[in-house]
Length: 355
Image (tube, one colour):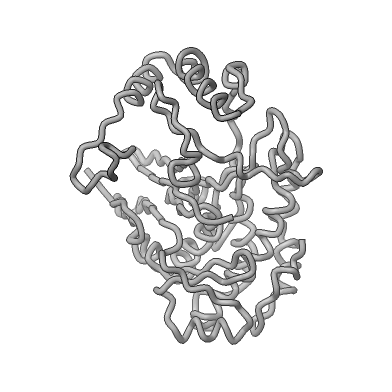
């Protein structure tokens, strides 16, 4: 990754012929070209060199799963997310909590709205971090967590004038991810997200295959009995959540927010700006963000200083970030006018492109 021992500069051409050969092989032969044969053998050998316990049989036994998405209503729309073992449920829980507040008019200030997002985040992330794991090992009661009763019980505990400490709900840093969405001329919509998690994942690459391995195993816990406790053949909790907004059974907007642990809050924040505040996809993607996580309220420089001061007065421990939070992409399908309206995150690389 460092040609000549130096980081590439803008405009340099980077080649990875080993990975190119692997991708062509997968294109010809399908999944077996990755999980069996030379590529799997290359990865297993590299892992064993580093002390890993993997065997080729572990790769060959891997099977993807077809899952039904979960969804919840918000402002007359249905928001679809992937089910556990990821944080799609968390995004829906935040939205269910926010739906009980009239956030569209002037009843709440900008600081009020960010405060409510922060408090709803703490409640939902407590469930995320203590209850969600591989459902094949620890079933998750999705219906209960998306019920009106649960949302109302959460709202009864939230105070507008004071931030609740993280311990009230008693019961991991940002990572690098890519998100993209597309809509074709027939209205078919795709919402897609992928990631190695940390920058370059584990930092481990198969020398013959050119494949870089992710480090999603860091989503496991070492606490016995935890839903995401590490175990054989178990999938770790992970953060990846592509989103889809649906109206009357028809897709109207694929959307996603990169940002590791922030993604669930990012979905709720983006939809709040889009549906409550009436912003278009680009404006909604550009709206200021906060993230209540690990005992502090992370804020961007985009959040006005008077708003930060207001939040601090309510008891939030403010942490000003040097870098922005997350990254959003979305396409609104305006079926009445027959146009697509894209929004692309200004905080990261990306673009809205039509052809």
